[in-house]
Length: 224
Image 1 (cartoon, helix red, strand yellow):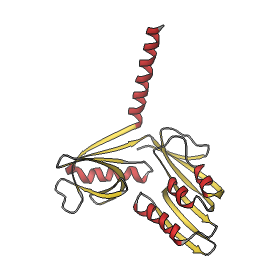
Image 2 (tube, one colour; image 1 turned 120 degrees about the horizontal axis):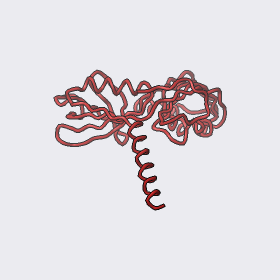
Image 3 (tube, rainbow, N blue to C red; image 1 turned 45 degrees about the vertical axis):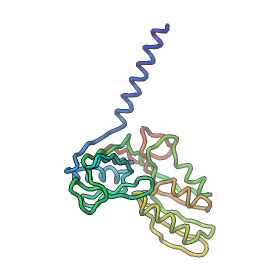
Image 4 (cartoon, rainbow, N blue to C red; image 1 turned 90 degrees about the horizontal axis):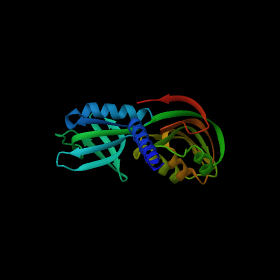
C-alpha cells in the first residue's frame, strides 16, 4: 500500500507540473530583438494578459516588472511602483539596457459581460474578483454618487493611466457625483478608490486565469 501511495503521489506531482508548464509561457528574446519582444509583449497586454518582463541587463543585473506600455522599441515596466523604460543593448535614452528579455504570461483571458450592478463600490467590484487570477481588468461606464471629490477621481485616474495598462475618462464631475468610463482598469483600483461610494455600473470584465471561474455571461475566451 505504501508503494502504491508513493506512485500516486509522484503521478499527482507530475500532473501538477505539466499543468503549470501548459499554463505558464515564457518567450525569450535577445536584447537586439527589442522590436520583436516589444510587439509580442504588447500584443498580449492588449488582449488582457498580465505580462511580466524579466530583463537581464548588459551589466549582469536581473530586473523583473509588470509590463505597462510599449512605444516603438521602448518597453515600459513597473517595478515596485516605479516605472522604468527598457531598450536594446545599445540604448541611450532608456533606463535599462537589455541583453536578454523574457516575456512571461499565464493561462487564458476570459471575457465576461457585466450586467448593471448597483451598490457600495467595495461590494459591487469585489463580486468581479474570482478566487484565482493573474489579473482582472474592467471596462465600462461607472456612475458614482455621494459627492465624490475631484481629488479622489484624480487619484484613480492617475493610477489607471500611469501605473497600469488602462485609462479613466471623466465624462462628468459635479457636486452630487460623477460619471466616468473605465478602460481595462484593474478592479483592485476601483475597489480602493470607489469603495466608499455608491456606484451603478455595467461593462466588460477581462479575467486572466487558468480557467473560467466566475458565474457571469462568457463573451469570449482568448488565447495568446
